[in-house]
Length: 447
Image 1 (spheres, rainbow, N blue to C red):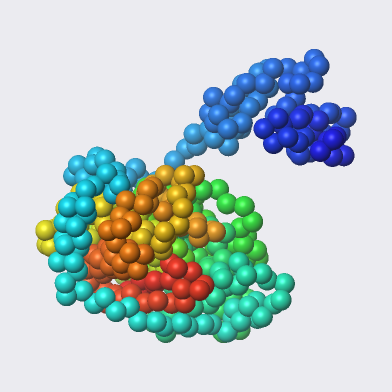
Image 2: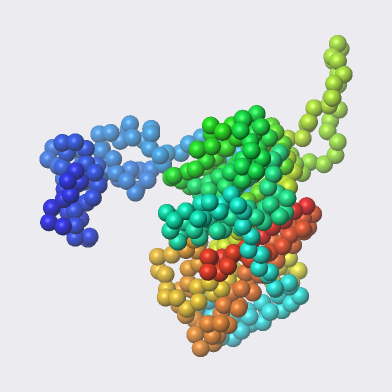
């Protein structure tokens, strides 16, 4: 590029061998990041709240008051680590690196895995469903392969919810790892078109709560505000979310339906804890204290003294990224301990689970680090390959994939055990083909 593009920054980026492409203000030569190159400009410094951007030194005090990275007041539903699980020391274990294990140690892990998986229902049935509300969009030729991939998954998820009796009015839908909120959008569209709802009065018995940790662009839930449906977005990590303190859920107490499309790693466990295992008012036992009636007060029905949301009506979560699970957050600890498996073996099985989808791909050095709250990955490039091919010659590609699938099934079996202990019928289903996505297993549960 011999010269900057019209209206773009005049700073030459040496590393990229081209001019900066940022748009500049009228009359300026450089963008905000490269304004220091302009004569007479004020020195720019790194923002003390977020080193990813800079600010003019003379405007630092004003910038700190409005910087998006400033610490904001915590909402009432934010309770530090409420869904993190007990701190029993397992979270302090170092990351297991399979490439550092000898063949004897790897074989011992495989023997432990096969013993623990004995008796598991390893045959996950294929059940590829669809929903007519998404078909029109699927038939639109303007959508490319990537869009169709997501639409097929959303269509099947709606089909499974319909089959389980979860897709209906009179309930609150909680979408964990909501991202742009497309799944909630299609749930609303399915209910609106099926019941021919037109007025806001008809929609008052329908709530949508979208939970997403990060700030998201191009959100679709904002398009539904005029329809009268209650759409609320919470920008919070599931690890710190107390549903009993979310006002719309507590006020209406509609039954909850939890949904999620590719809820990565430990985020699935955090969501299950958030729904069914959060300490607080919902776990209080015994009758409520008797309230004395004052003189002159008329008899009336006893008010609802139990705080918190309504009961959980069902769960439909597409699983992925088992290698991002963590022992502290994992809900199936009891299931693993009953089989003589502890935190160290669990961590190894999590790493081995990536073999189910990574095959023998080259190393992805830039893969994101493990993060228990990595809750939504829109592009679905989920599974990083193991850092080195530690088992070439020890296991074939097919054997690696089989071991990876077995690890995933064992981890998911612990989740099913957790749900069954709390009175739910739970199962695993392949809801789309592997050509659509390799992470094609759906966890469902109903009381």
